[in-house]
Length: 552
Image (cartoon, rainbow, N blue to C red; front, side, top):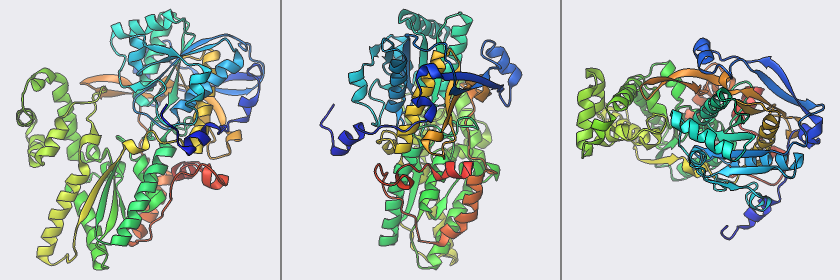
Protein backbone atom coordinates (compact mmCIF):
# COMPACT_ATOMS: atom_id res chain seq x y z
CA UNK A 1 0.00 0.00 0.00
CA UNK A 2 1.13 3.57 -0.61
CA UNK A 3 1.46 6.00 2.26
CA UNK A 4 -1.91 6.33 3.95
CA UNK A 5 -3.70 9.55 4.70
CA UNK A 6 -4.85 10.25 8.27
CA UNK A 7 -8.45 9.48 7.26
CA UNK A 8 -7.32 6.21 5.65
CA UNK A 9 -5.74 5.14 8.93
CA UNK A 10 -8.78 6.16 10.98
CA UNK A 11 -11.21 4.27 8.73
CA UNK A 12 -9.41 1.01 9.45
CA UNK A 13 -10.58 1.34 13.05
CA UNK A 14 -14.26 1.67 12.07
CA UNK A 15 -16.37 -1.29 13.22
CA UNK A 16 -19.34 -1.79 10.88
CA UNK A 17 -22.77 -1.90 12.44
CA UNK A 18 -24.89 -4.90 11.49
CA UNK A 19 -28.17 -6.72 12.19
CA UNK A 20 -28.47 -7.99 15.77
CA UNK A 21 -28.82 -11.58 14.56
CA UNK A 22 -25.24 -11.55 13.22
CA UNK A 23 -23.86 -10.99 16.72
CA UNK A 24 -25.00 -14.48 17.72
CA UNK A 25 -22.76 -17.56 17.35
CA UNK A 26 -23.26 -19.23 13.96
CA UNK A 27 -24.68 -22.26 15.77
CA UNK A 28 -27.59 -20.06 16.88
CA UNK A 29 -28.48 -18.60 13.46
CA UNK A 30 -30.96 -20.67 11.50
CA UNK A 31 -31.83 -20.26 7.81
CA UNK A 32 -35.61 -20.48 7.38
CA UNK A 33 -37.29 -20.92 3.96
CA UNK A 34 -40.35 -18.71 3.50
CA UNK A 35 -42.60 -18.15 0.49
CA UNK A 36 -41.72 -19.33 -3.02
CA UNK A 37 -40.92 -16.40 -5.32
CA UNK A 38 -41.46 -16.65 -9.07
CA UNK A 39 -40.44 -14.22 -11.82
CA UNK A 40 -43.04 -11.64 -12.76
CA UNK A 41 -42.79 -12.42 -16.50
CA UNK A 42 -41.53 -15.11 -18.93
CA UNK A 43 -42.14 -17.83 -16.35
CA UNK A 44 -42.43 -20.82 -18.68
CA UNK A 45 -39.33 -19.87 -20.67
CA UNK A 46 -37.30 -19.34 -17.50
CA UNK A 47 -38.59 -22.57 -16.00
CA UNK A 48 -37.21 -24.40 -19.03
CA UNK A 49 -33.80 -22.72 -18.81
CA UNK A 50 -33.46 -23.05 -15.03
CA UNK A 51 -34.99 -26.46 -14.42
CA UNK A 52 -32.84 -27.01 -11.28
CA UNK A 53 -33.15 -23.49 -9.89
CA UNK A 54 -36.73 -22.43 -10.58
CA UNK A 55 -39.40 -22.14 -7.88
CA UNK A 56 -37.20 -21.77 -4.82
CA UNK A 57 -38.30 -19.99 -1.62
CA UNK A 58 -36.99 -16.81 -0.08
CA UNK A 59 -34.81 -17.33 2.99
CA UNK A 60 -34.61 -15.39 6.25
CA UNK A 61 -32.19 -15.76 9.16
CA UNK A 62 -33.53 -16.09 12.69
CA UNK A 63 -32.43 -17.40 16.06
CA UNK A 64 -32.38 -21.19 16.12
CA UNK A 65 -30.13 -24.23 15.83
CA UNK A 66 -27.86 -24.37 12.77
CA UNK A 67 -26.87 -27.96 12.00
CA UNK A 68 -24.04 -26.78 9.72
CA UNK A 69 -22.29 -24.76 12.43
CA UNK A 70 -18.58 -25.46 12.75
CA UNK A 71 -18.26 -26.78 9.19
CA UNK A 72 -14.86 -26.04 7.66
CA UNK A 73 -15.39 -24.56 4.21
CA UNK A 74 -13.44 -23.33 1.21
CA UNK A 75 -15.24 -20.47 -0.47
CA UNK A 76 -14.28 -18.56 -3.62
CA UNK A 77 -15.14 -14.92 -4.26
CA UNK A 78 -14.88 -12.73 -7.34
CA UNK A 79 -15.67 -9.09 -8.03
CA UNK A 80 -17.37 -8.46 -11.35
CA UNK A 81 -18.02 -5.30 -13.36
CA UNK A 82 -17.25 -1.73 -12.39
CA UNK A 83 -16.15 -0.96 -8.82
CA UNK A 84 -18.56 0.33 -6.20
CA UNK A 85 -17.74 1.65 -2.75
CA UNK A 86 -17.96 -1.09 -0.12
CA UNK A 87 -16.77 -4.11 -2.10
CA UNK A 88 -13.91 -4.71 0.29
CA UNK A 89 -16.35 -4.81 3.20
CA UNK A 90 -18.42 -7.49 1.45
CA UNK A 91 -15.29 -9.62 1.37
CA UNK A 92 -14.53 -8.68 4.99
CA UNK A 93 -18.00 -9.78 6.12
CA UNK A 94 -17.67 -13.02 4.18
CA UNK A 95 -14.16 -13.63 5.60
CA UNK A 96 -15.18 -12.91 9.20
CA UNK A 97 -18.27 -15.11 8.91
CA UNK A 98 -16.18 -18.01 7.62
CA UNK A 99 -13.49 -17.67 10.28
CA UNK A 100 -15.99 -17.15 13.10
CA UNK A 101 -17.70 -20.41 12.13
CA UNK A 102 -14.45 -22.34 11.63
CA UNK A 103 -10.93 -20.88 11.91
CA UNK A 104 -9.71 -23.49 9.41
CA UNK A 105 -12.02 -22.26 6.63
CA UNK A 106 -10.41 -20.63 3.60
CA UNK A 107 -11.45 -17.74 1.36
CA UNK A 108 -10.02 -17.82 -2.17
CA UNK A 109 -10.14 -14.61 -4.20
CA UNK A 110 -10.21 -14.96 -7.98
CA UNK A 111 -8.23 -12.16 -9.59
CA UNK A 112 -9.74 -9.90 -12.25
CA UNK A 113 -13.32 -11.11 -12.02
CA UNK A 114 -14.71 -14.09 -13.90
CA UNK A 115 -11.53 -14.38 -15.98
CA UNK A 116 -9.69 -15.28 -12.77
CA UNK A 117 -12.09 -18.17 -12.28
CA UNK A 118 -11.71 -19.34 -15.88
CA UNK A 119 -7.92 -19.04 -15.90
CA UNK A 120 -7.48 -20.16 -12.27
CA UNK A 121 -5.71 -17.00 -11.15
CA UNK A 122 -6.30 -16.78 -7.44
CA UNK A 123 -4.97 -15.80 -4.05
CA UNK A 124 -5.90 -16.90 -0.56
CA UNK A 125 -7.30 -13.99 1.40
CA UNK A 126 -5.54 -14.01 4.75
CA UNK A 127 -6.30 -12.02 7.89
CA UNK A 128 -3.30 -9.77 7.22
CA UNK A 129 -4.42 -9.04 3.66
CA UNK A 130 -8.04 -8.50 4.66
CA UNK A 131 -7.16 -6.16 7.51
CA UNK A 132 -5.36 -3.79 5.13
CA UNK A 133 -8.52 -3.24 3.05
CA UNK A 134 -11.35 -2.89 5.56
CA UNK A 135 -13.65 0.12 5.09
CA UNK A 136 -11.76 1.28 2.01
CA UNK A 137 -13.04 2.02 -1.49
CA UNK A 138 -12.14 0.21 -4.67
CA UNK A 139 -11.93 -3.40 -5.77
CA UNK A 140 -8.14 -3.60 -5.79
CA UNK A 141 -7.81 -6.37 -3.21
CA UNK A 142 -8.35 -8.88 -6.03
CA UNK A 143 -9.36 -6.67 -8.96
CA UNK A 144 -12.45 -6.89 -11.12
CA UNK A 145 -13.32 -7.57 -14.75
CA UNK A 146 -16.13 -7.74 -17.28
CA UNK A 147 -15.59 -11.24 -18.67
CA UNK A 148 -18.89 -13.03 -19.11
CA UNK A 149 -19.14 -16.81 -18.77
CA UNK A 150 -21.40 -17.90 -21.62
CA UNK A 151 -19.91 -20.66 -23.82
CA UNK A 152 -20.07 -24.38 -22.91
CA UNK A 153 -16.27 -24.40 -22.75
CA UNK A 154 -16.25 -21.53 -20.27
CA UNK A 155 -18.78 -23.22 -18.00
CA UNK A 156 -16.66 -26.38 -18.04
CA UNK A 157 -13.54 -24.37 -17.16
CA UNK A 158 -15.37 -22.63 -14.31
CA UNK A 159 -16.45 -25.99 -12.89
CA UNK A 160 -12.95 -27.42 -13.30
CA UNK A 161 -11.40 -24.52 -11.38
CA UNK A 162 -14.02 -24.65 -8.63
CA UNK A 163 -13.53 -28.40 -8.32
CA UNK A 164 -9.74 -28.16 -8.26
CA UNK A 165 -9.94 -25.75 -5.30
CA UNK A 166 -12.53 -28.01 -3.63
CA UNK A 167 -14.88 -25.06 -3.29
CA UNK A 168 -17.99 -25.43 -1.18
CA UNK A 169 -19.31 -22.15 -2.55
CA UNK A 170 -18.58 -19.32 -4.95
CA UNK A 171 -19.68 -15.76 -4.16
CA UNK A 172 -20.18 -13.42 -7.14
CA UNK A 173 -20.23 -9.71 -6.30
CA UNK A 174 -21.72 -7.75 -9.18
CA UNK A 175 -24.59 -6.02 -10.94
CA UNK A 176 -27.53 -7.39 -12.91
CA UNK A 177 -25.47 -9.03 -15.66
CA UNK A 178 -22.92 -10.46 -13.21
CA UNK A 179 -25.65 -11.93 -11.03
CA UNK A 180 -27.31 -13.32 -14.15
CA UNK A 181 -24.01 -15.12 -14.71
CA UNK A 182 -24.15 -16.34 -11.10
CA UNK A 183 -27.62 -17.79 -11.73
CA UNK A 184 -26.40 -19.57 -14.88
CA UNK A 185 -23.36 -20.95 -13.02
CA UNK A 186 -25.60 -22.22 -10.21
CA UNK A 187 -27.83 -23.95 -12.76
CA UNK A 188 -24.84 -25.49 -14.55
CA UNK A 189 -23.26 -26.75 -11.32
CA UNK A 190 -26.61 -28.24 -10.25
CA UNK A 191 -27.01 -29.96 -13.64
CA UNK A 192 -23.61 -31.60 -13.06
CA UNK A 193 -24.54 -32.49 -9.48
CA UNK A 194 -21.57 -30.45 -8.25
CA UNK A 195 -22.09 -29.58 -4.54
CA UNK A 196 -20.94 -25.98 -4.99
CA UNK A 197 -23.32 -23.23 -3.92
CA UNK A 198 -23.27 -20.02 -5.99
CA UNK A 199 -24.33 -16.88 -4.14
CA UNK A 200 -24.70 -13.36 -5.54
CA UNK A 201 -24.27 -9.96 -3.89
CA UNK A 202 -26.07 -6.86 -5.29
CA UNK A 203 -23.48 -4.31 -6.46
CA UNK A 204 -23.89 -1.29 -8.74
CA UNK A 205 -23.69 2.45 -8.24
CA UNK A 206 -26.47 2.70 -10.85
CA UNK A 207 -29.11 1.69 -8.30
CA UNK A 208 -30.95 -0.47 -10.86
CA UNK A 209 -30.54 -3.83 -9.10
CA UNK A 210 -33.38 -3.77 -6.61
CA UNK A 211 -36.90 -4.94 -5.81
CA UNK A 212 -39.04 -5.43 -2.73
CA UNK A 213 -36.48 -7.90 -1.34
CA UNK A 214 -33.26 -6.17 -2.43
CA UNK A 215 -33.92 -2.60 -1.35
CA UNK A 216 -30.79 -1.09 -2.89
CA UNK A 217 -27.50 -2.12 -4.44
CA UNK A 218 -24.34 -1.25 -2.59
CA UNK A 219 -22.29 1.70 -3.81
CA UNK A 220 -25.33 3.78 -4.77
CA UNK A 221 -25.36 5.62 -1.45
CA UNK A 222 -21.69 6.61 -1.61
CA UNK A 223 -21.70 7.54 -5.30
CA UNK A 224 -24.77 9.77 -5.08
CA UNK A 225 -23.45 11.49 -1.97
CA UNK A 226 -20.13 12.18 -3.70
CA UNK A 227 -21.73 13.41 -6.95
CA UNK A 228 -24.12 15.56 -4.93
CA UNK A 229 -21.23 17.22 -3.15
CA UNK A 230 -19.68 18.15 -6.52
CA UNK A 231 -23.02 19.25 -8.00
CA UNK A 232 -23.70 21.34 -4.91
CA UNK A 233 -20.33 23.03 -5.37
CA UNK A 234 -21.19 23.75 -9.02
CA UNK A 235 -24.60 25.12 -8.02
CA UNK A 236 -22.94 27.52 -5.60
CA UNK A 237 -20.39 28.49 -8.27
CA UNK A 238 -23.18 29.09 -10.80
CA UNK A 239 -25.00 31.38 -8.38
CA UNK A 240 -21.74 33.15 -7.57
CA UNK A 241 -20.45 33.76 -11.10
CA UNK A 242 -23.95 34.10 -12.61
CA UNK A 243 -22.73 33.50 -16.16
CA UNK A 244 -22.81 29.78 -16.97
CA UNK A 245 -25.36 27.06 -17.55
CA UNK A 246 -23.80 23.81 -16.33
CA UNK A 247 -24.86 20.65 -18.19
CA UNK A 248 -23.90 17.69 -15.98
CA UNK A 249 -24.14 14.12 -17.26
CA UNK A 250 -24.28 11.54 -14.49
CA UNK A 251 -23.28 7.89 -14.61
CA UNK A 252 -26.10 5.40 -14.16
CA UNK A 253 -26.25 3.36 -17.38
CA UNK A 254 -29.90 2.93 -18.36
CA UNK A 255 -31.74 3.96 -15.19
CA UNK A 256 -32.03 7.53 -13.88
CA UNK A 257 -31.78 6.68 -10.17
CA UNK A 258 -28.52 8.60 -9.72
CA UNK A 259 -29.86 11.71 -11.48
CA UNK A 260 -33.04 11.59 -9.38
CA UNK A 261 -31.21 11.17 -6.06
CA UNK A 262 -28.75 13.96 -6.92
CA UNK A 263 -31.72 16.18 -7.80
CA UNK A 264 -33.18 15.56 -4.34
CA UNK A 265 -29.85 16.38 -2.75
CA UNK A 266 -29.08 19.59 -4.71
CA UNK A 267 -32.33 20.93 -6.28
CA UNK A 268 -31.02 21.83 -9.75
CA UNK A 269 -33.02 23.93 -12.19
CA UNK A 270 -33.54 21.00 -14.56
CA UNK A 271 -33.19 17.25 -14.01
CA UNK A 272 -34.10 15.03 -16.94
CA UNK A 273 -35.48 11.59 -16.11
CA UNK A 274 -35.05 9.10 -18.94
CA UNK A 275 -38.01 6.96 -17.95
CA UNK A 276 -40.33 9.98 -18.13
CA UNK A 277 -38.93 10.92 -21.55
CA UNK A 278 -39.80 7.44 -22.81
CA UNK A 279 -43.25 7.38 -21.19
CA UNK A 280 -44.15 10.76 -22.69
CA UNK A 281 -42.58 9.79 -26.03
CA UNK A 282 -40.56 13.00 -26.02
CA UNK A 283 -38.44 13.60 -29.11
CA UNK A 284 -34.99 15.14 -28.96
CA UNK A 285 -36.50 18.39 -30.25
CA UNK A 286 -39.06 18.43 -27.43
CA UNK A 287 -36.35 17.89 -24.81
CA UNK A 288 -34.33 20.74 -26.28
CA UNK A 289 -37.44 22.96 -26.28
CA UNK A 290 -38.10 22.22 -22.62
CA UNK A 291 -34.53 23.17 -21.66
CA UNK A 292 -34.67 26.30 -23.83
CA UNK A 293 -37.95 27.28 -22.14
CA UNK A 294 -36.25 27.14 -18.73
CA UNK A 295 -33.25 29.10 -19.94
CA UNK A 296 -35.59 31.72 -21.41
CA UNK A 297 -37.68 31.97 -18.23
CA UNK A 298 -34.61 32.42 -16.05
CA UNK A 299 -33.12 34.97 -18.45
CA UNK A 300 -36.31 37.01 -18.11
CA UNK A 301 -35.48 37.25 -14.39
CA UNK A 302 -31.95 38.38 -15.21
CA UNK A 303 -30.51 34.99 -14.26
CA UNK A 304 -28.42 33.73 -17.18
CA UNK A 305 -27.17 30.71 -15.28
CA UNK A 306 -28.43 27.37 -14.10
CA UNK A 307 -27.77 23.67 -13.61
CA UNK A 308 -29.04 20.76 -15.72
CA UNK A 309 -28.70 17.10 -14.68
CA UNK A 310 -28.65 14.55 -17.50
CA UNK A 311 -28.84 10.77 -16.96
CA UNK A 312 -26.12 8.81 -18.75
CA UNK A 313 -28.63 6.61 -20.57
CA UNK A 314 -30.98 9.40 -21.71
CA UNK A 315 -30.27 8.94 -25.39
CA UNK A 316 -31.51 5.33 -25.27
CA UNK A 317 -34.93 6.45 -24.00
CA UNK A 318 -35.66 9.06 -26.66
CA UNK A 319 -38.01 7.10 -28.95
CA UNK A 320 -36.26 7.78 -32.26
CA UNK A 321 -32.86 7.11 -30.68
CA UNK A 322 -34.08 3.93 -29.02
CA UNK A 323 -35.01 2.55 -32.44
CA UNK A 324 -31.72 3.76 -33.91
CA UNK A 325 -29.57 2.19 -31.17
CA UNK A 326 -31.49 -1.08 -31.34
CA UNK A 327 -30.99 -1.17 -35.10
CA UNK A 328 -27.26 -0.48 -34.77
CA UNK A 329 -26.95 -3.16 -32.06
CA UNK A 330 -28.61 -5.74 -34.32
CA UNK A 331 -26.52 -4.65 -37.30
CA UNK A 332 -23.21 -4.89 -35.45
CA UNK A 333 -24.19 -8.19 -33.84
CA UNK A 334 -24.64 -9.77 -37.27
CA UNK A 335 -22.06 -7.87 -39.35
CA UNK A 336 -19.36 -7.28 -36.78
CA UNK A 337 -16.54 -8.77 -38.86
CA UNK A 338 -17.31 -6.67 -41.95
CA UNK A 339 -17.57 -3.56 -39.77
CA UNK A 340 -14.23 -4.14 -38.04
CA UNK A 341 -12.42 -4.58 -41.37
CA UNK A 342 -13.16 -0.96 -42.29
CA UNK A 343 -10.03 1.12 -41.78
CA UNK A 344 -11.46 4.54 -40.94
CA UNK A 345 -14.19 6.03 -38.77
CA UNK A 346 -15.67 7.72 -41.84
CA UNK A 347 -16.02 4.36 -43.60
CA UNK A 348 -17.63 2.85 -40.51
CA UNK A 349 -20.16 5.68 -40.30
CA UNK A 350 -21.00 5.29 -43.99
CA UNK A 351 -21.32 1.51 -43.59
CA UNK A 352 -23.84 1.91 -40.74
CA UNK A 353 -25.81 4.66 -42.52
CA UNK A 354 -26.26 2.51 -45.64
CA UNK A 355 -27.40 -0.56 -43.68
CA UNK A 356 -30.06 1.18 -41.60
CA UNK A 357 -33.66 1.72 -42.67
CA UNK A 358 -34.46 5.11 -44.19
CA UNK A 359 -35.81 6.74 -41.01
CA UNK A 360 -32.97 5.62 -38.75
CA UNK A 361 -30.39 6.45 -41.41
CA UNK A 362 -31.78 9.98 -41.72
CA UNK A 363 -31.53 10.50 -37.97
CA UNK A 364 -28.05 9.00 -37.83
CA UNK A 365 -26.66 11.19 -40.62
CA UNK A 366 -28.26 14.32 -39.13
CA UNK A 367 -26.16 13.99 -35.98
CA UNK A 368 -22.72 15.55 -35.48
CA UNK A 369 -20.01 13.23 -36.77
CA UNK A 370 -18.59 12.76 -33.26
CA UNK A 371 -21.94 11.48 -32.00
CA UNK A 372 -22.27 9.17 -35.04
CA UNK A 373 -18.86 7.68 -34.25
CA UNK A 374 -19.72 7.26 -30.55
CA UNK A 375 -22.90 5.34 -31.47
CA UNK A 376 -20.76 2.93 -33.49
CA UNK A 377 -18.01 2.30 -30.96
CA UNK A 378 -17.45 -1.17 -29.51
CA UNK A 379 -20.28 -2.59 -27.42
CA UNK A 380 -19.67 -3.75 -23.88
CA UNK A 381 -19.40 -7.51 -23.19
CA UNK A 382 -23.19 -7.70 -22.83
CA UNK A 383 -23.90 -6.16 -26.25
CA UNK A 384 -24.92 -2.76 -24.91
CA UNK A 385 -23.92 0.56 -26.45
CA UNK A 386 -21.43 2.29 -24.15
CA UNK A 387 -23.57 5.28 -23.28
CA UNK A 388 -20.90 6.81 -21.05
CA UNK A 389 -18.93 7.52 -24.23
CA UNK A 390 -21.79 9.30 -25.96
CA UNK A 391 -21.47 13.01 -25.19
CA UNK A 392 -25.18 13.63 -24.72
CA UNK A 393 -24.48 16.74 -22.67
CA UNK A 394 -22.59 18.33 -25.58
CA UNK A 395 -25.29 17.35 -28.07
CA UNK A 396 -27.92 19.04 -25.90
CA UNK A 397 -25.80 22.16 -25.43
CA UNK A 398 -25.31 22.49 -29.19
CA UNK A 399 -29.03 22.11 -29.91
CA UNK A 400 -30.14 24.42 -27.08
CA UNK A 401 -27.71 27.05 -28.32
CA UNK A 402 -29.22 26.82 -31.83
CA UNK A 403 -32.75 27.02 -30.42
CA UNK A 404 -31.94 30.10 -28.34
CA UNK A 405 -30.32 31.79 -31.33
CA UNK A 406 -33.54 31.24 -33.29
CA UNK A 407 -35.58 32.66 -30.41
CA UNK A 408 -33.29 35.69 -30.21
CA UNK A 409 -33.97 36.40 -33.90
CA UNK A 410 -37.70 36.19 -33.20
CA UNK A 411 -37.32 38.52 -30.23
CA UNK A 412 -38.56 35.96 -27.70
CA UNK A 413 -35.19 35.54 -25.95
CA UNK A 414 -32.92 38.37 -24.87
CA UNK A 415 -30.56 36.61 -22.52
CA UNK A 416 -26.96 35.50 -22.81
CA UNK A 417 -26.22 31.78 -23.01
CA UNK A 418 -22.81 30.47 -22.03
CA UNK A 419 -22.14 26.99 -20.73
CA UNK A 420 -19.87 24.38 -19.17
CA UNK A 421 -20.22 20.62 -19.60
CA UNK A 422 -19.30 17.93 -17.08
CA UNK A 423 -19.43 14.14 -16.85
CA UNK A 424 -19.46 12.66 -13.36
CA UNK A 425 -18.87 8.94 -13.34
CA UNK A 426 -15.62 7.33 -12.34
CA UNK A 427 -15.16 9.82 -9.50
CA UNK A 428 -17.90 8.07 -7.51
CA UNK A 429 -17.00 4.41 -7.88
CA UNK A 430 -14.02 3.98 -5.54
CA UNK A 431 -14.54 6.55 -2.79
CA UNK A 432 -14.25 5.62 0.86
CA UNK A 433 -17.64 3.99 1.48
CA UNK A 434 -20.14 6.02 3.46
CA UNK A 435 -21.00 4.59 6.87
CA UNK A 436 -24.18 3.22 5.32
CA UNK A 437 -22.32 1.36 2.56
CA UNK A 438 -19.59 0.18 4.96
CA UNK A 439 -22.29 -1.27 7.25
CA UNK A 440 -24.50 -2.58 4.46
CA UNK A 441 -21.67 -4.32 2.63
CA UNK A 442 -20.33 -5.97 5.76
CA UNK A 443 -23.84 -7.30 6.45
CA UNK A 444 -24.19 -8.51 2.84
CA UNK A 445 -20.92 -10.43 3.22
CA UNK A 446 -22.19 -12.11 6.37
CA UNK A 447 -25.50 -12.95 4.68
CA UNK A 448 -23.64 -14.43 1.68
CA UNK A 449 -21.62 -16.61 4.06
CA UNK A 450 -24.75 -17.93 5.77
CA UNK A 451 -26.43 -18.70 2.44
CA UNK A 452 -23.32 -20.60 1.35
CA UNK A 453 -23.04 -22.45 4.68
CA UNK A 454 -26.63 -23.63 4.41
CA UNK A 455 -26.22 -24.71 0.78
CA UNK A 456 -28.54 -22.13 -0.79
CA UNK A 457 -27.29 -21.98 -4.37
CA UNK A 458 -28.63 -19.57 -6.99
CA UNK A 459 -29.48 -16.95 -4.35
CA UNK A 460 -28.63 -13.28 -3.89
CA UNK A 461 -27.93 -11.88 -0.43
CA UNK A 462 -30.67 -9.58 0.83
CA UNK A 463 -30.74 -7.04 3.66
CA UNK A 464 -34.08 -5.29 4.25
CA UNK A 465 -35.50 -2.56 6.49
CA UNK A 466 -32.54 -0.37 5.55
CA UNK A 467 -34.03 2.94 6.71
CA UNK A 468 -33.98 1.65 10.29
CA UNK A 469 -30.83 1.45 12.45
CA UNK A 470 -28.50 -1.32 11.30
CA UNK A 471 -29.30 -3.44 14.37
CA UNK A 472 -32.88 -3.72 13.05
CA UNK A 473 -31.99 -4.71 9.49
CA UNK A 474 -33.48 -8.00 8.27
CA UNK A 475 -30.99 -10.33 6.50
CA UNK A 476 -31.82 -13.18 4.16
CA UNK A 477 -31.68 -14.18 0.52
CA UNK A 478 -33.88 -14.62 -2.53
CA UNK A 479 -33.55 -16.86 -5.61
CA UNK A 480 -31.83 -15.09 -8.49
CA UNK A 481 -34.23 -16.58 -11.06
CA UNK A 482 -37.12 -14.69 -9.43
CA UNK A 483 -35.53 -11.41 -10.63
CA UNK A 484 -35.16 -12.44 -14.27
CA UNK A 485 -36.84 -11.88 -17.60
CA UNK A 486 -35.98 -12.54 -21.27
CA UNK A 487 -34.26 -9.77 -23.23
CA UNK A 488 -32.68 -9.31 -26.65
CA UNK A 489 -28.87 -9.34 -26.40
CA UNK A 490 -26.34 -9.66 -29.25
CA UNK A 491 -29.23 -10.42 -31.58
CA UNK A 492 -30.51 -13.30 -29.41
CA UNK A 493 -33.12 -13.77 -26.67
CA UNK A 494 -31.37 -14.38 -23.34
CA UNK A 495 -32.32 -14.66 -19.66
CA UNK A 496 -31.14 -11.62 -17.68
CA UNK A 497 -31.97 -9.96 -14.39
CA UNK A 498 -34.42 -7.18 -15.17
CA UNK A 499 -33.08 -3.67 -14.54
CA UNK A 500 -35.13 -1.71 -12.04
CA UNK A 501 -35.88 1.65 -13.66
CA UNK A 502 -37.33 4.76 -12.03
CA UNK A 503 -41.02 4.09 -11.42
CA UNK A 504 -43.09 7.08 -12.48
CA UNK A 505 -45.89 6.08 -10.11
CA UNK A 506 -43.46 5.58 -7.23
CA UNK A 507 -43.10 7.94 -4.28
CA UNK A 508 -39.64 9.32 -5.23
CA UNK A 509 -40.63 10.44 -8.73
CA UNK A 510 -43.97 11.82 -7.58
CA UNK A 511 -42.21 13.93 -4.95
CA UNK A 512 -39.71 15.13 -7.57
CA UNK A 513 -42.52 16.05 -9.98
CA UNK A 514 -44.18 18.13 -7.23
CA UNK A 515 -40.99 20.07 -6.48
CA UNK A 516 -39.25 20.63 -9.82
CA UNK A 517 -41.40 23.59 -10.85
CA UNK A 518 -40.11 25.55 -7.85
CA UNK A 519 -36.52 24.47 -8.48
CA UNK A 520 -36.67 25.57 -12.13
CA UNK A 521 -36.89 29.28 -11.32
CA UNK A 522 -35.15 29.26 -7.96
CA UNK A 523 -31.44 29.77 -7.33
CA UNK A 524 -31.79 28.54 -3.75
CA UNK A 525 -29.80 25.39 -4.31
CA UNK A 526 -29.34 22.71 -1.66
CA UNK A 527 -25.66 22.23 -0.75
CA UNK A 528 -25.18 18.77 0.82
CA UNK A 529 -21.42 18.99 1.38
CA UNK A 530 -19.02 16.06 1.60
CA UNK A 531 -19.62 12.57 2.99
CA UNK A 532 -19.39 12.64 6.79
CA UNK A 533 -17.91 9.71 8.71
CA UNK A 534 -17.96 11.25 12.19
CA UNK A 535 -20.74 12.96 14.09
CA UNK A 536 -24.40 12.36 14.97
CA UNK A 537 -26.11 9.45 13.17
CA UNK A 538 -28.51 11.84 11.42
CA UNK A 539 -25.46 13.19 9.58
CA UNK A 540 -23.25 10.10 9.26
CA UNK A 541 -25.68 7.20 8.80
CA UNK A 542 -28.60 8.63 6.82
CA UNK A 543 -29.59 6.65 3.75
CA UNK A 544 -30.41 8.19 0.37
CA UNK A 545 -33.50 10.36 0.07
CA UNK A 546 -34.72 7.94 -2.60
CA UNK A 547 -34.68 5.01 -0.18
CA UNK A 548 -36.31 7.07 2.57
CA UNK A 549 -39.15 8.04 0.22
CA UNK A 550 -39.57 4.48 -1.08
CA UNK A 551 -39.80 3.02 2.42
CA UNK A 552 -41.81 5.83 4.04
